[in-house]
Image 1 (cartoon, one colour):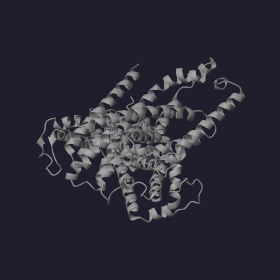
Image 2 (cartoon, helix red, strand yellow; image 1 turned 45 degrees about the vertical axis):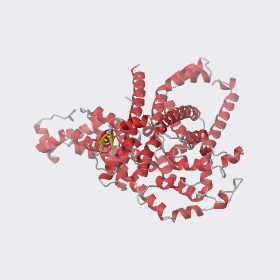
Image 3 (cartoon, one colour; image 1 turned 90 degrees about the horizontal axis):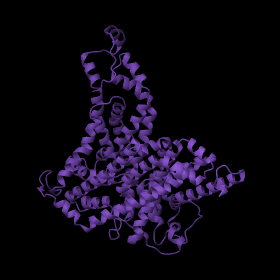
Length: 284
Length: 313
């Protein structure tokens, strides 16, 4: 037990540090193994993939990646994913940022109800919104278009933008806009020329978090797209049909290419991850 | 509306300073309407993608309606859709599967997440590297994560079966199928809980812990009597969020089992998806989605009440 009591000797501190490192290394190995193994599969030839016992050391090949990148289907889905994700981010930022500013600065009648409804929109199961949305969108001729997916993604990205940006606006000192108003600037001019430039870091954080959610979504895109407009997760889900008949190399290489961009933007926004995760939680 | 801090200034000042911006009556009216105009797009968007669809599905859930009919041409069916659901063994099974799935995954995620967060909170050289590495699984596209695990659990060619030296058809047996989809979820979301709780641990005051260790409390005592109570609000938030997100379980189940075998992994989302978009019984789907909404709303209200009560104390 002496090793556990914090104010022990130098030796017990060392034992403690070593055991923490061992625990961390074991945990990291467990959590990263599935991903590393699958990335390993993507670098094997067809024969190596199905080798029994599994190969742990081999000469990596890029043939699966070359195969995937020369498929029109994959490239089309990649473009669709890009269009749909960036479209939904732009839409939510344009619609949500002014509202977040109003929520942070000008308490108004019905404001707390509106804010609460936004949180509810984020919390309710997407399939429940999707059933009627599918019917209404198909009557409007929107289903199978990328626009319908962009609109549908607002159910999660709009609350996220409003939640994150409200926090950024609240942290901004009021005096900045007030002095602009005193100088005769309209609310719009003050917002556009004084406030917006100052919260650019917030805009970046909110955009990246929305981009990640939109890129990873499957359910909305699966229902609202067809073969021409499907996004990457929908294309990937197509691999789940067969079993060992499926081309494991092509599938794992596509998977790696799907997660690569999302890992890049996630690490870019790592500082803001917690704000994004807790959006939807009701605090204060 | 809007005008909480409108600066009231003498006319002379306005004339000199405001010259460049212009102060016509129209502009002053627009300025007073700023708040309304700022929230208008959000309100309109919410009505379009949330309010109207939910109202329509509420209406639809009391109708007998098929996709070939006009929107409001269904026949009133009373509560028949709801009665059908509550007597459908597959729906009842999906209720119990969702309940078991949510409770088990949330409990294990919280336990693992807390453990990870505690380890990551210890200040040691290179700890940042582990913090970065351990959040990777939660960023991965859920569909890709589920496909990856499907390969890892493949009966004939997988590394898992090779290591345990047997031939288990993980996704083909009701008991192991449910465990498998839960493991994928745990793998992705324990890091999510860890990130939230680590943020909580970092923001706790250090004085109580220091005082207790000077008084001779062991690490275990400090954790149990000081850290854990202080961390409780963060644990509640994690519990709320994970419960809401596990309740909608879909992606991993769709890819790995599609609800089978023998409905062992039929979550409510999967049931509603199959009813609405495979069998195209959309009025039944609407009724199922309203039952899901009600359960989810009750869960949220319960947690919000708990969190509010804690804050009031």
